[in-house]
Image 1 (tube, rainbow, N blue to C red):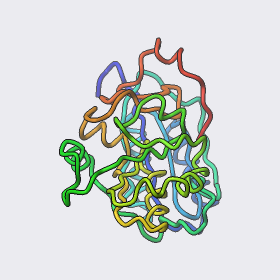
Image 2 (cartoon, helix red, strand yellow; image 1 turned 180 degrees about the vertical axis):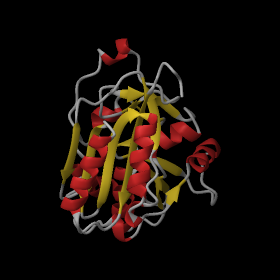
Image 3 (spheres, rainbow, N blue to C red; image 1 turned 120 degrees about the vertical axis):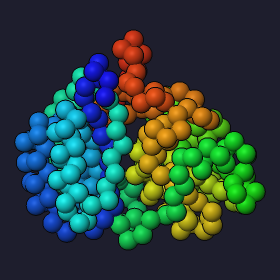
Image 4 (cartoon, rainbow, N blue to C red; image 1 turned 90 degrees about the vertical axis):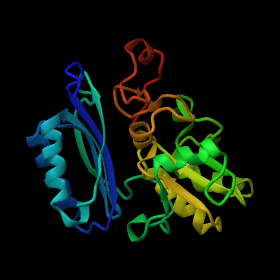
Length: 260
């Protein structure tokens, strides 16, 4: 930990079947409050999605508590650091979806799409093809304003304003993806996981999600084949490829955005 950046920020999600959403909401709120954490926790029957920040030990104690639930034992947070608390309050909500796609047939809690590790994607992009010699395209599944802050060089960007527009956009561009290895990506993995499942159900045979999203890629690979920063939905507004928050003078130029 850098003494100048004492606040630990985590993002994590787990697609899993949760029937007791209200009870889990109460328990998560109590635990996060007890550890003086701030951020957002979203819970739905399809799983949990969270963005939290606080003192390192408090954050890790919360994660350890969460992992005691067998349904959430494998949840793996992405970590970054900041000088100050980037969230103003704690919100724990029960939602219909932990990331809204408005496509009920897509149920990641019953089976994931294949994932590709950051190091493998970097190697494919270095080589210009995957291990079978197929051309590789990266597909940004984030909102347009996020993409504008940074993305993989040459990534496909369908200019969606919200993730629920992804299925309609995909239907217009499926022909562009035929015969290629498609790697969908997003900030932390949750949107590109649903996106990869959707594309496979539309008949594309070789679709992967980027394991852990951009944040895990930054952590393991750095800035290779990536240009710019990664937008995040808190007061940091973005992180650099070394996972440091953007400089204050950069933040002033960026528009405020609500929770996605």
